[in-house]
Image 1 (cartoon, rainbow, N blue to C red):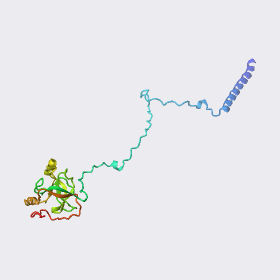
Image 2 (cartoon, rainbow, N blue to C red; image 1 turned 45 degrees about the vertical axis):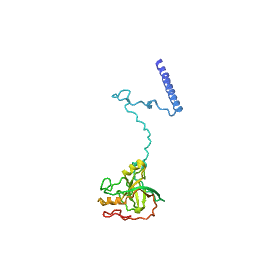
Image 3 (spheres, helix red, strand yellow; image 1 turned 180 degrees about the vertical axis):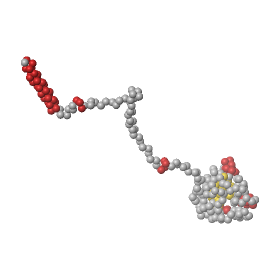
Image 4 (cartoon, rainbow, N blue to C red; image 1 turned 90 degrees about the vertical axis):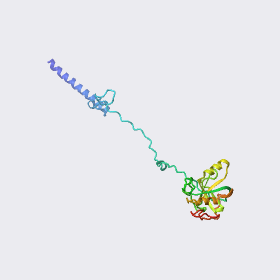
Length: 238
C-alpha cells in the first residue's frame, strides 16, 4: 500500500517538471524570437579542405592578382607617325635683280672642248642648269665659273661687251688658285657646247687684255643679245 501511495506523488513531480521546462522554453522564445535552434546552426565558416598533394604552406587555389592600372599609350600625332625626312640640300637661287655693282675682273672663256672632263658639259654647282648652258637673258643667264670665295654660287653678272647675263654655276681651278694667292679677280665665261677646234680660237679672240668692268647683281633691264657665242662654225663679233 505504501508503494501505491508514492506513485501519485512521483507523477505529480514529473508533471511539474515538464510544465517548468515548457515555461522556460516559452519565456526564451518570447525574449528572442530570432534565436535559431541549436540543431540548425552550422557554426562559423571553415576553410576549404587542403589538397593533400600540395605542401601545407601553399594554398590550393592561389588568390587572383589585383589588376594594376596602366596609363594608355599616347595617340601618335601625324608628325610622330611618319619618319622625318631630311630634305636634300639645294643650291642657292640666283639673287633678285638689284642696282648692280661694277667690279673689274680678268675675263676668260671656256667651252665643252676645254671643260673638265674634256668634251663634257659638266658643272660643279648646278643652280638653274643641270649642264653648262643658257641663253644670256636675265631669266636664263649663261653659266660661268670662278672661285666660291670670290663670288658666291648663284651670283648673276652682266658682261656688257657681249650684252649677256651669266650665272655662277661652275668651278674654275685656276681662278681659285689666283684668288687664294693674291686675290686676283678672275671669271671664266661659258662660250658653247662645241667640241671642235674652232671654239678655242673663238675663246681667245674674245678674251680681253687686263681687267674689264663687270656688273655684279645687275638690274634686269639691260640690253641682251642671244646670238650663240660660238655656233660650231663661227664666233660672235662684239
